[in-house]
Figure 1 (cartoon, rainbow, N blue to C red):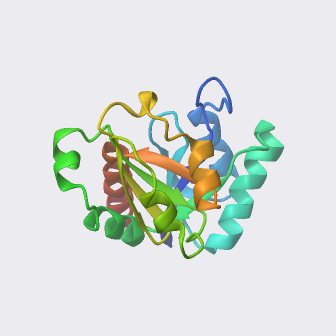
Figure 2: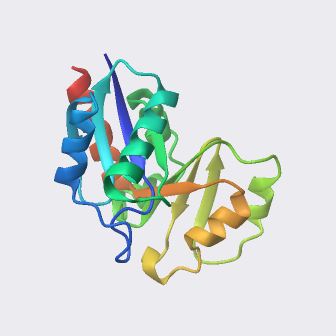
Figure 3: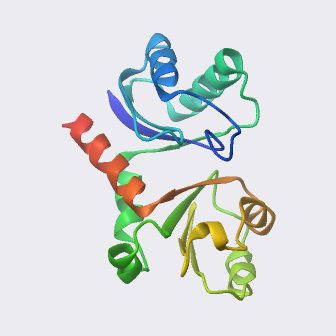
Amino acid sequence: MAVFIALLRAVNVGGTGKLPMSDLKAACEEAGLRNVSTYIASGNLVFQTGKSAASLTRLIGNILRDRFALTKNQVFLRTPDRVAQVIAGNPFAAAAEKRPNHLMVSFLERAPQPGTAAALAAYRGPEQLQLDGDHLYIDYAETPAKSKLTPAFFDRTLGVSATARNWNTTNKLLAMARALKG
């Protein structure tokens, strides 16, 4: 059985996409996923399954839609190995150590079009950005809540959907996945 990390976009954020994690866990177990765990209330799942990534994206998306009437949420799947690569490739090591809650990783639905990195480099603000394939590192000099870098900015600039997790959450999800993997 393979281990996957599912990151759900727009769950329990700003009063929208309300979804109790215990209900999500139960629904995923009923759908055949095994050893399902959630982490904090922002839509993070770790589980085992014999299903393919494509079928899992559909399955979890259908659960969100059919069971919880959530139609604007997306599912981003990553393997533990892929998340380990993301962590190892962090270009902002000092931020990870000093302010891990202000260092974010945006997991993208796919790698954006060529030229996107140049568009991001044109941004002038206190944040530092580094695009790397299907994820984007964001070092917020201040709290992310005060930033002008909004999900809408990233959707527009990247041309792909994304969901972000802070450095602590990213590392915790990898630890959970590794523990499940054995």
